Image (cartoon, rainbow, N blue to C red; front, side, top):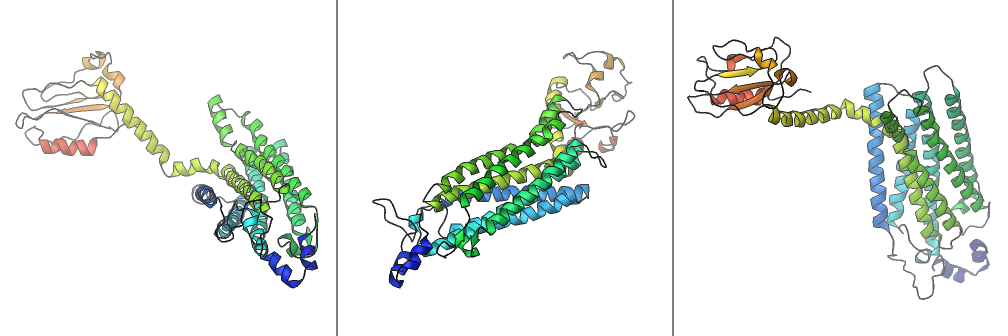
Length: 431
């Protein structure tokens, strides 16, 4: 295929300008170029890019909080993750910048030849930011796993495999980026094909980069699984931990799709359209790689924020409310104002003695008071105001604890106001 730069150099000035103002690729029959507002898929790309960016940002700051505020320890992999987030943000800038003009999934015949270099310049920057992100995150993953699964001061087989893979990944991604950046002479011909010069075989570089990247993802995915299944945990916990560290499968899927889209790009004359799919696959790969490196820190942050305690309290509240409706029938109203406290350590009525037999006799539901445990049931009644029975539960601190009677009036009656106050202050459940 003749080089467009050589064709332009052979044309007179007027013909050259006319060619530069024309479409960057010959449109199909019956299709007119649209340079002003070409059809695109910007809405789809904005949705995917924004969702991924928000997800990565939340995960990154979750990891940051876990390291700085919870563990209060920072290691070299945390610096690599920070560097990776910086290059990820730079890639996001490329995404949003190219959406302004001309957009993604735009056919090449809808772009002027003289404007094509602006598109390919952003793509060139994006590929470098993508490579720099992988160069930071994959060593961070390997360092973190060697620190997680290997005791401190030990260098076993797993430790050596992690560090050998780390060195291989660093050398591989660094060499690929160097090769792609010196692939053309002069350097500007990488993104501006109207410049005369020479380039290496782009197909070899792109396919080698994509295929070896997939191999790296698969190895990193499989690496911790053997160690996880040797841990002394229950089968359910092993499955949970295995899934937690298996988010790398999503990275492998994105890397596989990237190979397929690369093949289509390299074999298509409409390269501005096909390179858009490659860019989305690179974006997805980076997002999923951040998931791999940051998700293990999320439970620690959730625990520090009390999410686990809140969930447990909510579950206990629901369980106790359900149990209360089954254990405690609604009592009848006595003739005189009185109160009763049913507890495994004390059950007295006004003017009465402890009813010890109550704890040994099952109630009508077949449940004895001893089986009820520390759940306290207080009944307050007032004959003066003809109040309906009010029941609420309070949490006692020990076997000798009793309810503070100061809230009742001095004559032994519990008025409506005290019932409301006690109900608000003591309606808590066992955790």
